[in-house]
Image (tube, rainbow, N blue to C red; front, side, top):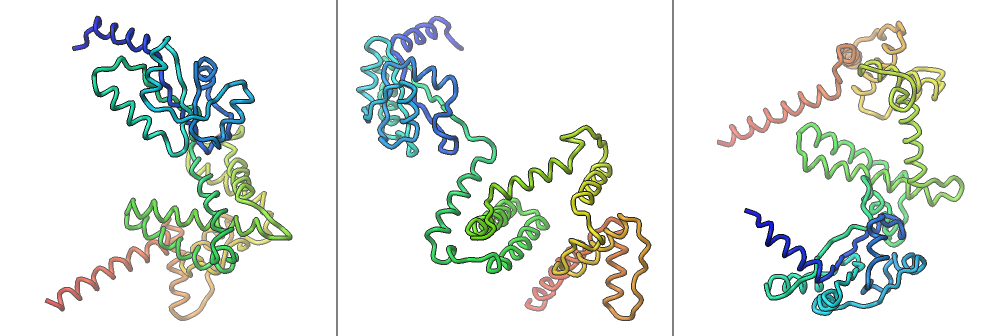
Length: 334
């Protein structure tokens, strides 16, 4: 049960002993962009210290008139300082943290013999969603500049890896392996960032990962007028209609076959062509011919019309066949 009297005494004891504030910042946010509580605390502190002379926030704090000491005080020193006059001290933490200081404070607080100042962890800036992507870009820049292998790769060199990683991602999706899915998504993302970094070095027509991101952002906004514009869509079918209409206006293709890569797996290629024909309402009879190829084409078109991805269906069947093979091998070995 809480004791209001004792709680009040404890609160007054903490107030009388001052405050030690550990101010953390994110290196993924531009230096100087601190939260309002952080600026208030910094301006009202009796002392601001930082052990890292190269901390990126220091020039901005000094420009704002905040005096920062280059020091690494021990826990005892800060406790005594705060207790003498109910003072507040702010410790601007480095990327490596302040483990020695926090360990020392924990020992003093745990002894039960100290009138401890209030201890506070104050985030001065936060990572936004997607902030770790900045780390990926930075790491890729470093690898491209220093690694003898990565530094000379071309788009053509990486083409096969993109295909391999895509198939591995598909395998993770089909098997339902969540850990593999997370890893394979990262591998596919690496291909995107790697290609963008290579493109940045092009002497004639360079572009960066920011240009890549800007292009897809513009495309998504334009193709979702029911989200970012005045149109409405209540069903997935209406959304698809918006997408196809805006895409057709963007591409201005002379044929529905434009933009269909012939290098994709044959069943997927056949299904994609059938989808284009069906969407445009064209009456295109299947080519007449004997042989398994034409039979497979007819099956792929029929599957697409029924809402089934023939490539996915065949992969599922092949996986079942693989399991049957393994079972037969195991039975033969008994």
